[in-house]
Length: 282
Ligand SMILES: CCCCCCC/C=C/C(=O)SCCNC(=O)CCNC(=O)[C@H](O)C(C)(C)COP(=O)(O)OP(=O)(O)OC[C@H]1O[C@@H](n2cnc3c(N)ncnc32)[C@H](O)[C@@H]1OP(=O)(O)O
Ligand SMILES: NC(=O)C1=CN([C@@H]2O[C@H](COP(=O)(O)OP(=O)(O)OC[C@H]3O[C@@H](n4cnc5c(N)ncnc54)[C@H](OP(=O)(O)O)[C@@H]3O)[C@@H](O)[C@H]2O)C=CC1
Image 1 (cartoon, protein in one colour):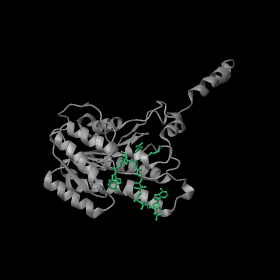
Image 2: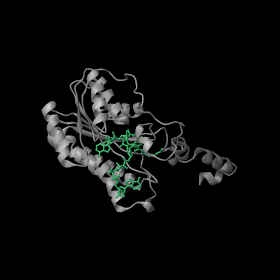
Image 3: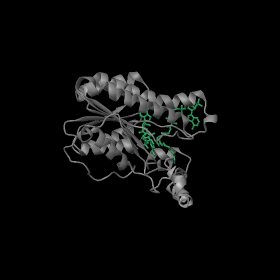
Image 4: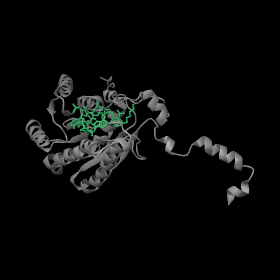
């Protein structure tokens, strides 16, 4: 388990709010669920495996908040419906949804078959849609709320991950569309796109994270931690972000800065042209 950040937000920031965090038993989801509880929220922790979500719910109860762990696969509508009924029963409302559950595998596109592509689309796009629609139908179209999707930095694609790039790009377009359509119901929706974050999820990848950092040219030279992401999620889902909707927030240590012009090359170009100001003025 990754170390949790110290208390950083006001302890009453989320008082009387109920939050649901998918994939809340591990990694960024766990950090978000616990930090939200420290801010006064009651929390529903959702994931497939019982043990991690129960552990997280136990920590939250020890903090004095109400917490329920619900074992659910976000790909299965029947399980989602049961989860909604349980939440209605236990809490009567739901104010915040963090669509964090997800995952994929690394593969060159030429090796990927249709089943593998569909598997990742179902887990990361369809699963998030199903959770979002269910939460809206059962709670938020009635009383408003805030939804944050945890996606990935796929603005320029993500080589080795064509399936997840397609899924996360789909989530972004879906989020922006719903932000427009559901504003009248008092629902805000935003995306947080993590760069390379140290979590147990990284153990699934046969790539040395340090090597990955060099390859993707993260300008900070180290991975992010779970608290870097939970801080952004809490900002967006709480009253701190009450004027923010339809936004995508890259939290990536500058990983995507290399998409901009390389300043060193620009400086060299200026040096060469300095003797030719007339050319520059044209
Ligand atoms: C160090 C740098 C890493 C860069 C990271 C980039 C940014 C992202 C980081 C993260 O997201 S970190 C944490 C997130 N957690 C995970 O990613 C979890 C790891 N993945 C999984 O748990 C699973 O792969 C899955 C995506 C959830 C799918 O599991 P599921 O049980 O639903 O499917 P399967 O029955 O296993 O497979 C179905 C189907 O999919 C294809 N497939 C599955 N795994 C692979 C694989 N490793 N390689 C190629 N293809 C795969 C395949 O078609 C499977 O069908 P069958 O062949 O089994 O019939
Ligand atoms: N770490 C990183 O650098 C990056 C991570 N991300 C994304 O951030 C999110 C959190 O990842 P991270 O904390 O790193 O990794 P983790 O693997 O720790 O978290 C993923 C969580 O999602 C749950 N989950 C996965 N599939 C399902 C499903 N079908 N139904 C319900 N729960 C599911 C898992 O629990 P269980 O298996 O018990 O269901 C697990 O708790 C993921 O969407 C990930 O892809 C994006 C970019 C970078």
